[in-house]
Image 1 (cartoon, helix red, strand yellow):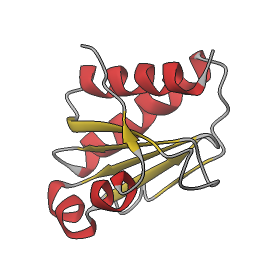
Image 2: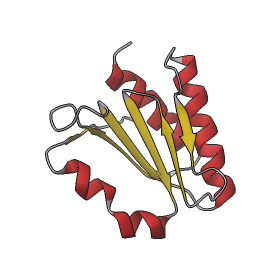
Image 3: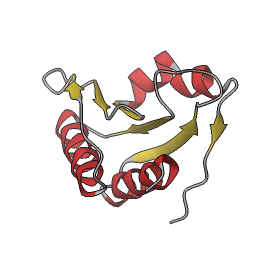
Length: 115
């Protein structure tokens, strides 16, 4: 299964869990740290942890190994590292402050995820 297909499945799983404003950005042409960045928001710390669990479980189902998860204790920003795919789950205020979409879409290509 290619990385874009897996990223779309993860994005769909996040959307099913009521994540807010899910974005999938193909960054293969601008960085070597990952192929795809997924950014989404959650309504609470608990919601962010549930989203992170869902993203990790979907990755495992697609035979993608989860290398690590950071920020679950603080909950404001949870990062799930899957090597080729990195998922950023943030409170809307943190997301507005850090503006990751602006950073990664500068040269990256947003991928449409059908619902």
